Image 1 (cartoon, rainbow, N blue to C red):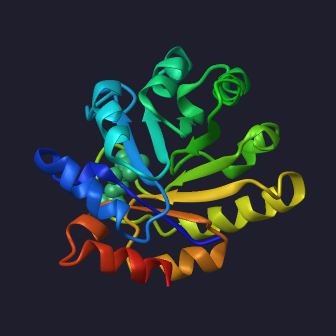
Image 2 (cartoon, rainbow, N blue to C red):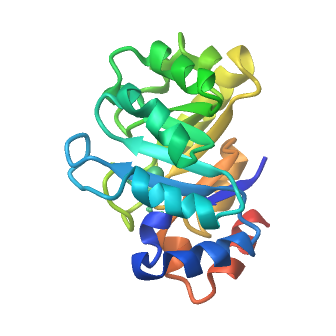
Length: 214
Ligand code: DX5
Ligand code: ZN
């Protein structure tokens, strides 16, 4: 699969409705929504009240990436806010299996996120539960960072693990994705690419999305 999930973190927060309508009319598949708590990551972004408004305007699934400690506390809240896909960090969950099942039971798709330093091999006993796995290709917290090259190897390892244990599981990559590395990531086995700066800082965001999918 070749899906694109533009990250609203790089949108113009003063004109969110305008930017969401641009995405509605573009070829993008999901909207990537980054929630940060200032503890798990050094930055704070936005939470459920803003997501409720995003949901009102967006016509596509909301792919909500929680960069918060102990995200299991908020599963029902993010469902109520309008999340369709909820991803939580391996590093932020003491009881990851419980949290992923709670997400599914709430009627959302669930995903596990790995920081750049967290090996794919740690997913061996949880991959069966995941609808998707998100590999961070930057250290989470900020848009516009440089892509970490080791990600290609991790995508290939994860593809092999999914082939062996959960072929339905989607592989998503987030951070520093652009028109140069996108084809290589799809080729390595990625299904969904998140792109913030590459989309919103380009002259024609809708065209950039179309090129990324091509
Ligand atoms: C980083 C976020 C990303 C970020 C990506 O912590 O998880 O989703 O918005 O932005 P770019 O594509 O600019 O690296
Ligand atoms: Zn993200």
